[in-house]
Length: 191
Image (cartoon, rainbow, N blue to C red; front, side, top):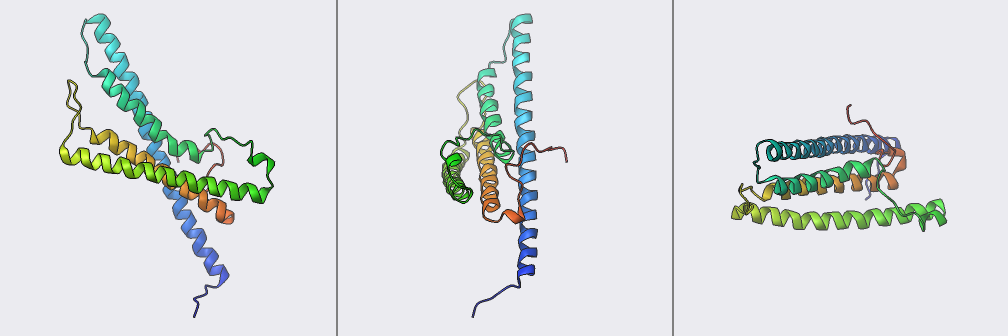
């Protein structure tokens, strides 16, 4: 015996679920943008401090290069989810522009599933690496022994956020009436 939900009730639940996913995506993108902005601001302050110390005091922090690498990679990874959500990633549309609307949506759904698989595959290995680094207590070999699981954890958070945004985009392709507002243009993260 099949369980059938009355269509308006099913539509109501789907719209509520999509609204929850939409809020989750918005909050994740906000957190990622705050993290990326903080990383870039910290990078600028770190470089300015290093310049000041070298030119005025003939000294150095000795960790600027190492931390600059962590901050740049963190900013890039954290910016991926909001960039995808805003539709600001570079897209190659040579093939999809030649297709009909239905075929274009099927192709985009296939590409979305492939992208989700790749991001989750990457996140799985980052998770394993972060757990291994945490369990072994591995630190950077530089002057300041920085725990290496922290940059891996930031990378993992950025990838999981990207996976959630890609998943929401896929849902938006399948159920466009219950839109999740992915790839709709610039979004103000101040709300």
